[in-house]
Length: 274
Length: 274
Image (cartoon, rainbow over all chains, first blue to last red; front, side, top):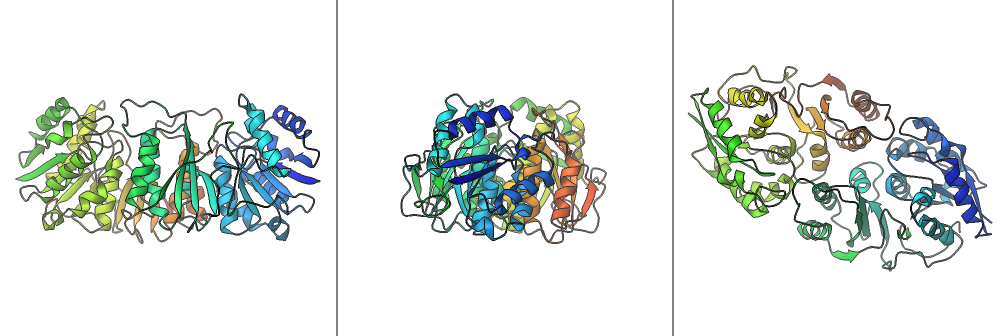
């Protein structure tokens, strides 16, 4: 039995969604899901106060009965808890798998930088709210249960990470930023103007000198601006990669959508909680 | 006579606005304004192609007949031209004053990092479009003409810089980022959610370890989100400054508005083009 603790380092979810995810998990008899009550706290924007979110994350990571920690939802907030929670993680955290994406990348990045456990870009419980979101949630559950069909198809022998573009940009140069020399870096974005995407690429490519290459995930729901930007996201990625001599490796099958695939940080392979 | 070249490294302005600014400049008989035709180019989002913007900026900076280079407008685009234009600047640029703010901070930052000329956070020609914007434009013209009433009132013996928060965040860790040890750093923002402001503060404070302190300019037009963030911009600034032991020095009289004051980079004092 693989026991999975779910907490919410950023924004809260509602109990109804947890019930739906637990129902889906019934398809995977090897998995046992525990939603930490902190997931349902609401304090303005956040799933409880900073200290409530730090406590829940550290508690899930340090509890020996769990094999994995799954972030319930992104949406901003992890930056306020990641360093403090990571500082409190002990040896029990080392054998755990941590899963999430979007704002959760702040924690995944910090854990990878600190070599704590195993970090996995993967759909989250909140994806159940998307139309057809069952498929996304099932992908993470399936991967935890040992299925490998949900892995991002371009994964190869290179160590790889996947991040939301804004999240990676904010990580750059901070104590949470992992060394990414030799890595394939996948980035995806949602709901940002093309000019903002260009600006973020200016920033991240200046920080990613030694990477093996960059892959562009999906850039969804780009708002329309008052004038066309003229460069689409692929042209933007190619432009900035070329300026910094970063190999542009093509597209990645990740994004804020139900098709978002699984990217274990580092070299893929092996099973969760092993 | 102080001759001022105006170019647009980011977005274009319209000729009507240039006419209004030239009319205002008549009040200052010691100033002579030259709008470079590139200001009025329109290529989608931008004031002409990347190379047209690089050319105009380098041309204005290198032309011995000019004493100052004033950016017409911000709005994103300078990141795509700053490095190339700065690389082409020769000795003529060293004796010039460069003025602007917002996205123009990309260039001011790069010039300050490279010790080329003198950099000044100051209202731009495009501010003429704001209600009461004459006052803002007049402030820059007045400062160029030798008036000192438009200086940001907290300026003291500390070297100081002022940046748009997003612009500074994007500069951090790039070749355009100046060393800011010992500086007072002023930041202002416009039209960003509180959660985005928090995220940007997480980022910049991790990069500003050795500064003398931070001052918070105005944070205008914060959009309403689906839940209240609970921390306002001053609480955000205090939180992140405290985490990185950066002295929070209070407010600064800068912002995307007609009251935006003048902040010469480095130690204030002395006249333009001297």
